[in-house]
Length: 219
Image (cartoon, rainbow, N blue to C red):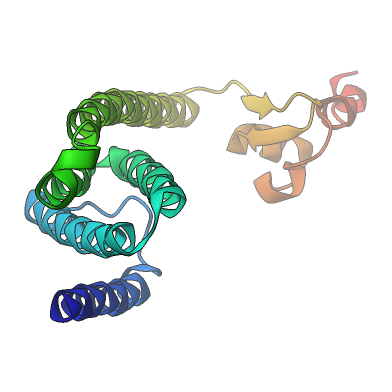
């Protein structure tokens, strides 16, 4: 079993170094940089490989320990599987592959090596994996729904901005936008010209103060 343990440890170290390199490449890219389906499935494959290697190492500890130690190993393993599924739920294929790989490897290892004494854990691990898979799908659905809502809101803001720009260019009215404190966050060019100032100079000022500067001229 020692070559198998060494091989799994080597796999985990290799993926850790590869992920570090990927992080250094991607850290300066915009957060909304698109990811191809091929990249997502490659990530799922690597995540599944990591899950199997991790499970093999955990099962080696399970084999070497007594009953209390084996209980602790199973508890920690179940927690790590759950956390991994939750972290990767934003890409459902990755979360599902992680859950299937870790739970499947543990079920096979315990069933083949300790089936007589711990055989009852095998169907429970299967049930646990099924619940986690359902949780991953639900979390992914909520995540995707939130992204879609943010995208639609961004598109609406862009559309409203274009309409306001068109209105400002063709109308003689003054337009402004304020925050909750009454400070200007957007000022039309015509309002800035009426006050004898610039758009940048008016931004952040109180609307009442800006309008007060126009009163003497209005009188």
